[in-house]
Image (tube, rainbow, N blue to C red; front, side, top):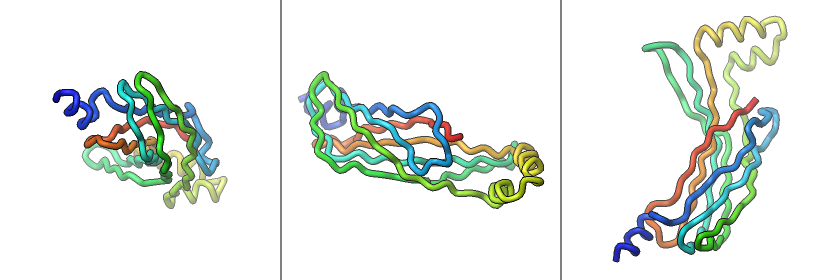
Length: 154
């Protein structure tokens, strides 16, 4: 009885691990990586959804605001057998496109104003943080395994 409840909730079930490069060029059009699936019990994964998200923060103190933008996503639709006490790896690539603000466009367009734009961004506390999120759909489980990992785009 307890074993069935554990399986249904995903306890001791399939887990995800994202393996990503430490740094990746923002000029690239896709982010490569791998997903490692492992479990204490044999289970079947039917799909893995991967998304690349940018968290854009600006302002200081009470004026601080943040937005999140979906830069790219991909889904692996495949039946994957995850063996008990074993692991399986999947390779993936997330195609993405960077969203530029007006200041970013001005910085890229004009060499003379580049330093002024960088100074203005620093004064405003502008930062972009990027992360990859992965969620696997597992047969017979109510709570799907989920993993989130920061990635540095340069």
